[in-house]
Image (cartoon, rainbow, N blue to C red):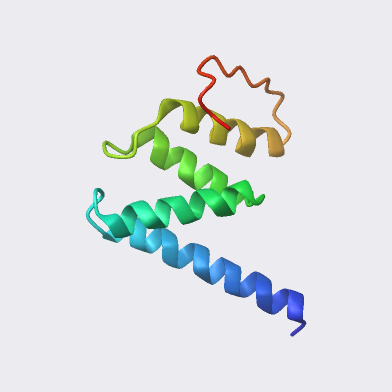
Length: 95
């Protein structure tokens, strides 16, 4: 197994663990918030799978609900699949 494959597998395992923590912990816990923050960093790094996953969390979570972030991450995930989208940030709250 090449070094790139090992790194990819380790990242995939880390992503799985972070989503498991997020879904198993009390939603308002520090551990769940830390997992969501780590997942958002991974999505910022270019993981489209994570982008779609956190879009769902920001869209439907009672604790972590953030419409602007959900809209942004759905845009990233769908645009990467070839959907024609134009991002309209009317909130000016996303960096």
